[in-house]
Length: 102
Image (cartoon, rainbow, N blue to C red; front, side, top):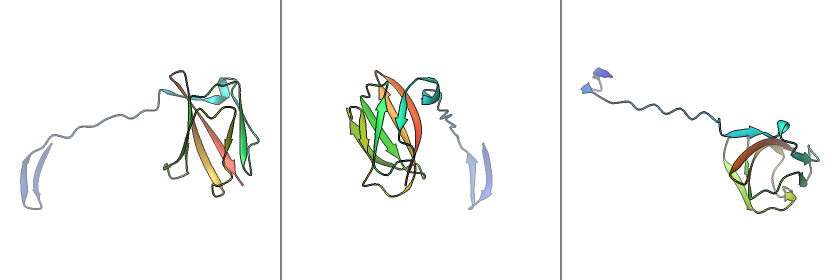
């Protein structure tokens, strides 16, 4: 990349571009994993999965909660209403799901 004249600078610069494609994350719709109730007012149940961890992201992408070994339930009662993305890790595999908190 050649920059000439911007902020009185010129020279050669290296620009590194990284592709952050989410190929390693699987939507739960094809896995048999179930999350209910959805929408929820508080606790959700996870079935057909033995999660090692669950990460909860808000609609802006911020990590708002992490639960190690959540068992078969996850308490969202302290979270404000909104749309959340769950990243569920099980035996090295990562699955994603959307949950609406009312």
